[in-house]
Image (cartoon, rainbow over all chains, first blue to last red; front, side, top):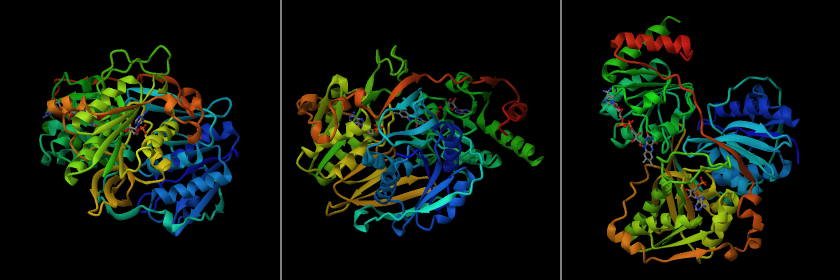
Length: 331
Length: 271
Ligand SMILES: Cc1cc2nc3c(=O)[nH]c(=O)nc-3n(C[C@H](O)[C@H](O)[C@H](O)COP(=O)(O)OP(=O)(O)OC[C@H]3O[C@@H](n4cnc5c(N)ncnc54)[C@H](O)[C@@H]3O)c2cc1C
Ligand SMILES: Nc1ncnc2c1ncn2[C@@H]1O[C@H](COP(=O)(O)O)[C@@H](O)[C@H]1O
């Protein structure tokens, strides 16, 4: 058993390192590495990924394990699980971390089951107990409670982290790069990727966005969502929606925020014509600053926000967009 | 086609969460229990597949205390054929690894299956991994968080659509396979009155701790509960976020917008 802490890089479909990876490296360095007296390592899985090692070094990785294999070009649960679990068996790290992305959530459970590790998902706080067991905090019961979860005996201890919660912080290291060849038998990869459809959007992704503007049922139609998009674009925000707006067919499901939608934690969340149901709050309650715009002064959202305006959105939102534009143009 | 649906009973989404005196779990007094919403999508999809094929069998399975039979009855009333209840009060706090092993053993005992469906996560503890653990345990493929399911006409493959960051993926796996269901997959039906009546007569097999052969699962007896878990919740808190609650009322629109932008810049410092 080594004292290494691994952060496995999350890559986008275009093969770029996701911000969540840098957030994981930064928080692991601040909160775990020193206390554990262990080495902070990056892990890269993919095809043609060796060149990314220096990026992990920039955020503090002292060593980077690379499994560069043609069979890891497209993500498959089998390929990634074999690669990571074999690497874990060989080097026996103490802690293994990745982002709580659609990929991290997909193969980490398989890896944990395969190596007999404990795994928690979507941690918002990382720490160690005095005897060096991993201790995380995570939401339970749809953001209505926060649990402190301590790992018991089984190693390694694995967790995914919620994107956008930890602060990325550079700590330039020149990492030692270790190329590992793991034998992946092509016949063990049963998942076939038939198609990858990219969304052409200039806006940031909801789960990674630092600012989000969402619209609810009060938007009254899909056409009116241009008001949300204009405001979002004015401040470089992602655009979201309540379930009522999605179920009414105004916008697609991928924009839904909430218990049965995306869980987001931006610095700024602007909820427009959203009443503030517990299920919506479950998805955005960990935002740092919440702004509500609603014409009903008794809407529950006004009990859950930092700033609110009681007004008709059709009048207020265009004015607000203009104000933001004016302010940001001055810079 | 034999379809297994792994379901879980969770508190109602509106439930007020109070921390029990133990400090590390919820006070279940007065809680209304429902089928975890994502598992409802799984049940609905299983029934739809059976209806479409005109033949097949839908078997529900759950692990948990006596009250969970209600979740099974709901699924049976929607149209599932039978259910398995791995039942004991001591099962609370069993870790996902052990839950999956026990559920896996029961599924193996069915003498073959084609498809396993479950929710993408349970909405209470949200461990988010039981389904995929089961797939790993049974040595079958999985596709997680699916929003569209299509069986090949020879019933040997399943093709699913899933949302990922920045796009959508269509993936295909051979059967048997496990799928975890996401919202958007379907609209779960309500149980009809005749459905509810029929459900009462449908078989629910009970499995007790004595029926679980822990050794063959590579587990210890303690693993079926907190004592042998890989982690434990040491503290549960209701988040106390202090929101500023500054609400601008009865202001002219331009002034209100100006005021808000000023607050966001100068006070909150987020713009
Ligand atoms: C199992 C389950 C899961 C759920 N999951 C989710 C989820 O993931 N996400 C989610 O959002 N919901 C979810 N819901 C639904 C949730 O309960 C609410 O129904 C939903 O959030 C309401 O959306 P809304 O606030 O847009 O609509 P409403 O509650 O109808 O609110 C609309 C608001 O718009 C205001 N308004 C109307 N016109 C104007 C105007 N011109 N100017 C200003 N304000 C205006 C109204 O005053 C009102 O407050 C779930 C429910 C269940 C049961
Ligand atoms: N004790 C259990 N019994 C049956 N199903 C469960 C149990 N725990 C979790 N599940 C299922 O596993 C899925 C994933 O849940 P989880 O990984 O625990 O968040 C849920 O949708 C449930 O259907």
